[in-house]
Length: 494
Image (cartoon, rainbow, N blue to C red; front, side, top):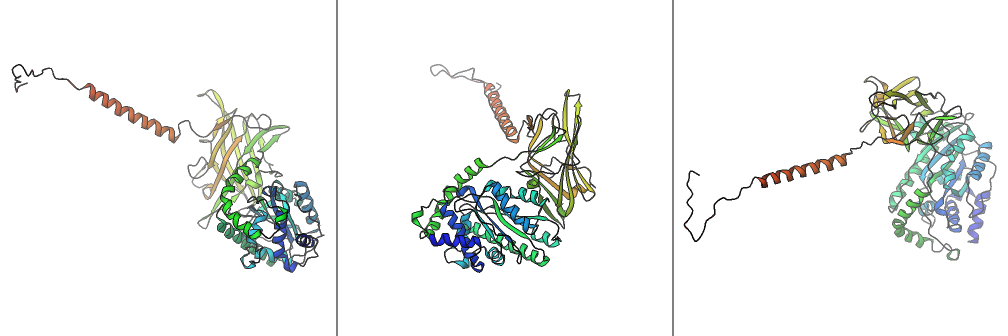
């Protein structure tokens, strides 16, 4: 253990030879997991490096067992970006833990089975790698907002194909975000395959950046931890590492449910988008997911706007928004969405008095997409409405699959677009403070289940009524045969 800790310190300070960084990266991360097993379910690793030929001032990582919080992480990033390249490539995985490197990084001599060859090559070629093994996951999930504030630029959500068409400039800062999936649970092979695919994507991106000859700073981290670490005493050492990994495969299924429950409890609900006129809030918007898609070459290309709109440290640009007593207009401004440098998502609302109901209602008259001088308009006034004192909420507001938003006309550019809002809630009038008013839900009173129950009950009532009617029509005999008397003769004419 003493030699392991000494090796870790040498890897951090740069005295260790980086040509063997791949194996020691795994041991470094695994060592931190052993030294601080108590709260590993709340931490994710973060790895930072620069392109070949670019050096950064040495930064000392925290002591073993120390968890890097949001402020300390911001300090690390600030020092790296102050002296390093301003083109930042962020590989943001959905989930990741220290054990992912231990399980799949060839930590116990099976180096040929490592799923991180491209990551290891990048760390070997970099002269300024920084490995933070224990970063609190709320801090890592806010890394986009921290980078956005320090670079003073909006994040660009990319894929390798889009990156090849983008021309970067060393003098202009850029924040390129690549979202990476993660497969967890009891299916360990699927997790290994997905991590291997993520490493291949990292290799493609770094290869494209190398062809453009633009220096860059790369960061690899995750939004949440992927699994818990089994408790391991210091007395056991590393000798039981292989058997521990084998035992974990059998325990994973039982632990997954508990981990998911804990993650849901710890998850923080982000605040809604809030537009103020003066000091008063007049428009509120919240959604679990905002996405737009465009049809190109017979294929739908989707772009997720959620992380650019909501979340800790995210401040969407709302210039162009306005509101008064009868009209409200919320404008969300983005950059570089599906190849369009300027992109706006606009919600236009109106409040009117309806004489039939003798009360005021507000309607979402239109959802507009403005991009590079073109406007696509979806009409929502027929389906998206609520009393003026309420907010409007719906589990799904889309322009397809039972659409609530429809293109304004058959020739409108909106026919080439799709919009999808999940857990959508909006209020444009009579906002009190920074909280939504009582929500008018889009679900009708008579749901399909209610209608099925009513129709089944009605059918049963009809069958019962018919049966009672048939019973009431039965008539008893008015003549009976007496065995002691003469037989009854019934004339045929009767």
